[in-house]
Image 1 (cartoon, helix red, strand yellow):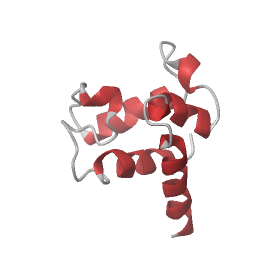
Image 2: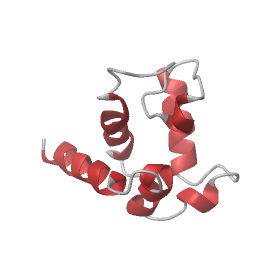
Image 3: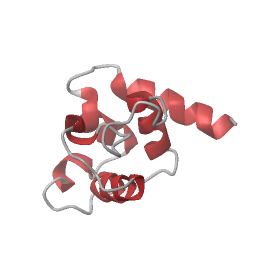
Image 4: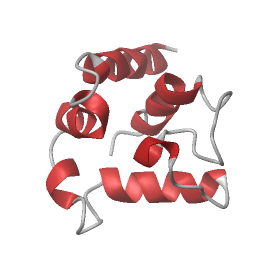
Length: 93
């Protein structure tokens, strides 16, 4: 996955971890999953978005826009564009 993807999702979902729920700065599974640590959350979300989890591979096996669509774009239509804009800002800093 693009190195900017997880930081951008965290910025969009929890103001960069400021409003995280149970070590879950990415809002993974609608914040219904508690992680033991931020590192655990990073590994789990990256593993899924990278298409490595066979249970979620069909959702996250495409390009970044497709990943974002399945991550939260089906609920919040502008979500992929919002995260992609954040990714662009990260790259320009």
